[in-house]
Image 1 (cartoon, rainbow, N blue to C red):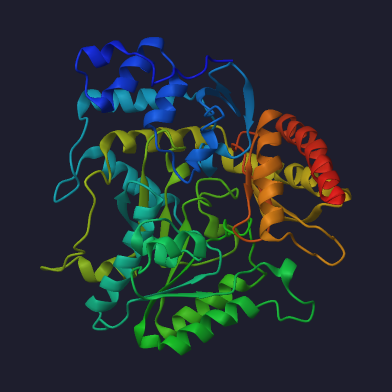
Image 2: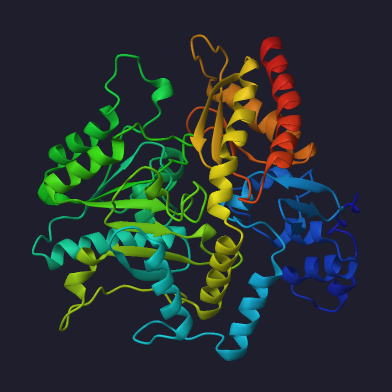
Length: 481
């Protein structure tokens, strides 16, 4: 165990030296090399209840190798979430860092604002060759929220260029997570993330998602697709710019589409002149066994947003990939898509992305996922004998287990019970036993698993060996309440 954080109220030589108050903890903690003290004093972690670490250690991950990461105590964890659905080729790939270093020697940075450089040109061409259909134009950004923000702006700009400037609205689904910048947050269908920052960018409309586990048996399997048309008609087609959907929806727990869902949505969008955006910040780059998740379900989008696995997260990078039709109005005379980010298409990030694609091709990562996803799914399906497991769903290396109080009635947990179950027990118990995954109750309570794409039977068995006893103990806690 690391030492306790120093008492910052005790006498400190930096006080006598006239050190500013904001620097005293750095000097004291830095002298002892205490990462815990520095983290608690200065690091503001994302989506984190910082108060949770007042009396507990901050988990500090120090290194990674393959499917595993290690903390500062040397303890090993199976990274069952690929860090955050993004370290697709696994940890410790020196060749990705070496690609960045080699590029830095040539050109550390230059902007893509009115200029180009070889790495961005070559990567754009390579992505276009991998993308389905006529998705041939690549607009680089720094991450997923930027990609979604850019795609919505592009949809608005496209319609304006085509003489329909009133088309500005976007349709997405309940519980869908599309990012946290203000435009992307409008598309996000999670009230707890939206409400603290309202008013948001106007124009968002949300419809039902594809969680058929919660549907009645007699419901039309394409009900969720039809709801998109109803929303477009209600808003007025002349005001709707785009529909944005993930191939497998993250929020709510890996919600897969019904057969024919995306084909029906494509028909609806075509009928009403609305662009279809496939949000593949998670689902691209092999997560579903294909370069792009839309290929898995025969979806034909006008625009794809992507990030995360594009570089296996070894460098921050994302992209908007547009069809020739969408790009065409901006390619002539004085036309312009008046939008950009400083670091979009950063040459070092481009070099990492190229090296990442090299690894995926050389090691047949997509084929590996398709060959082994059945074993992964079978392992999770095998947990259905536990009474707390209500549903298992997902695709590729992107799955979730929904937890229930009563499997026969599908009764879920109330907010207090979910808090106690997920944050009070499951998160800590799984981590303590060496498994990093995600416990989430933004919809009904789920456990999400999204391991590196190099995982196989050994890792699946390890996941099961941890999940089974922890879920069994969770159920005992439910029964005793």
